[in-house]
Image (cartoon, rainbow, N blue to C red; front, side, top):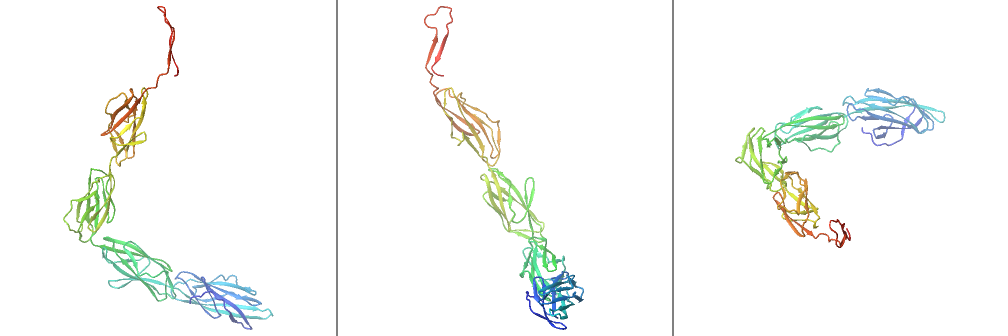
Length: 506
């Protein structure tokens, strides 16, 4: 009997000499109900081996005092007393006393015990009355068993916790189905708290909502499907969360049929890959295509057929193809050639198809690309480097910077002016050849020291790239007014007169 929500009700207790009133409640978990003297009290444990408590409370609403003797049990040892050390207890008006019964089932069968509590009341008028509270306690518990059957023959097989459920050999991408039955062979309702499965080849079907109650002598059913993803053994685990605890079941099956395996053969390594895996080819210089081998093997247990092979993407191509369609017996192997020929620097994408399997292709085209600047401004090959104007007798300069803006390392082998000129010269040149990694740069200085006024031109060559160089010489500063100082007029022979020059400003 399930205990209903708390409801305090009047209970008449016949005492030997008079009538008095007591309230008695029984509570299991968060469920409580009022009970009458002589009632049958059902205690339902969640599982065999799991303890549950039944709390009894006696409330005295009278105007005298009530003495409660220690409760007595007679019957199954699975039901014991808890919290009765406070008895005997004496209650004044509107007071209560409680004790609990512990039920620890050792099996699925119901058990019984008698509960007797002697009470005596001293009333306000000095009279006394005594009597006995008596109850029949019935303990019940659920008990689950698990079994399964295969759709092919519907023969039932028992399952133990930690046992194994083995599916028959099943073709890849087809399915085998088992029916799992959870039966409650106990004496009260029990709960299936959870159902789950692990392993990519196993799926649960027709699941009930959980937690799912299962009445005594009733069953819960669901299906377990095995769909092998690949040829060969597959394993997983079915996990049942029963009231008695976790109930794991090991799942095993074998996938049969062809199983294609793939290997990318590189100059220094061989990489295995599976259906749908992405393939990245080695970084490759633009204009210098590379070819790699793709080895295909049937490692399954049956013949397989490959009907089509091809590549998409402008940078990718497949050659050395066998005659198609190709039937591959177990352990057969063939090799095709995959070429990567990037047309420009940067990332390239495509796809490779072998039969029903598709693979994404990626690779990076490496390209050298120098950029040039002077004085913080960019300049293109065949452009002009303008030098700051300088007065005759003075000089100016600019710093020329070369940057590798490409995706591959590159070298600078020569930096020179095409015509020797006293007006233009190079300084701070890096040691040549100069290797520049992607993103790296080097600089040098272009000096202009005009000896004449007007335009001066030359050509700067950086490897095979040329730039016009142009500068202009301006007149030197105007000389200030001057005056000679010292001896004047006719001077006698063999004399050394002092002579000086005076400028009006520095």
